[in-house]
Image (cartoon, rainbow, N blue to C red; front, side, top):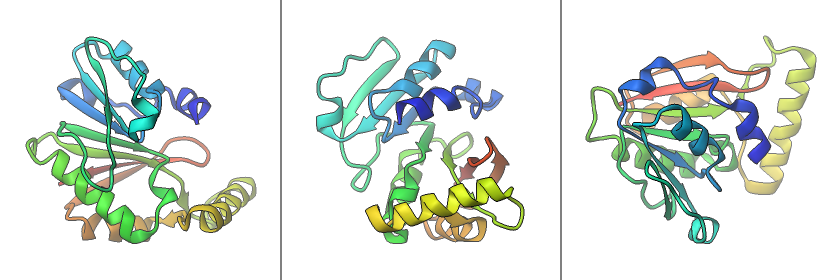
Length: 184
């Protein structure tokens, strides 16, 4: 997973992030992505939320902190929440709960707040054969291993709206990953 974070680097962080004061990287592991964000945006407070045993021995810095917790229970308050390649591990009910917790986490910043989701979007008709095959194989693995799944844009939209969000923007990111910016 760390290599995936390094490949993504800052491609998905837009100019809008300069207006934020804080961001939570949910399921951020050892903080690889958060460290890149902190080094680039020195005034941005980054919080990495992951399970307590993942973050218990990690040290932060002046703008990076680690919080042990469970995204199904609560997410620390921030201007933005980042979920990278996380939601495909979960079924629809759990995804909806995680997204509701994300919405609650950004509720203090209705004007600038957003949730940033990096995921694969199933789109067999428009993907190259190789990308469609990769997504289908990943989907089977998620179904068999975690009871999760990859989703089509319509399925993502339904989850976002059911979690109480008003709108979203979808942009391509890499050959198999897309970027959702979800707004309350």
